[in-house]
Length: 322
Ligand code: G3H
Ligand code: 13P
Ligand code: ZN
Image: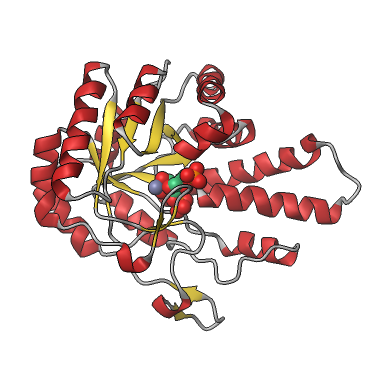
């Protein structure tokens, strides 16, 4: 099947109490690792491209890699999504250039301005058969171009969501309930420690999610910053020369709970980076004589695939839904 929008995916996910994985792609091995996992698990998937990914790999290369995945995996629905579109022009460029979904992220702007920019993107996108994700509330953490300190982050105000959705016409809404971008989501001061000394992050604000869903029945909600930062990969990175002390993510059981509620799209990028980096660091330590990129990228791609399969089955619950 050709690239699809997220409309059908989200409707089924909402009704079925699961979420679709939205994975960031930057190169061929990442696209292959994700889509091979989704093909084996019969899972629909969203491949998303950030402004930084377009700057790194070039729009055309990324679109063609995703189109190749569509050809190789004809039995699963694949959507191509712009992640954190910073302005109308970037969204327009992706809409004109083959994407089936875009995010306009004007969440750092005042409410009225966020509505105005989002509405403009929605009008253009809908005219071209493309769906739009918007954001209300501000996540903490680090994206390529945006760094938001915990002090500047803010939870979504449930009392704003109905007006925002009605006035913009957006198709899905990303909200801030305590997730955060990157591999260092919380400071040690924000966490407690378990018996082994590992950091335990503060729980997500499910009360906000519930109130948002009550005000927007049937409407798909999106969670950004949802990597779990698996400790086994952090340990491998640190064992083989890396330095990621106190890296911490969102516990899987909390994401499972969100997926069973109104959350239909869960964004994961840092965990892909972590799996690839851990695998390559270990490979170089064990095979110092290797210099052919295929020797270390092949196991890196397999590590991504295994991790994505785990998430499809044990976190998102979207296996068997394609
Ligand atoms: O939320 C941001 C994604 O992780 C993309 O990161 O802007 O470094 O490509 P990036
Ligand atoms: P993570 O940094 O938690 O992987 O979040 C990715 C994301 O939200 C992409 O938009
Ligand atoms: Zn994000």
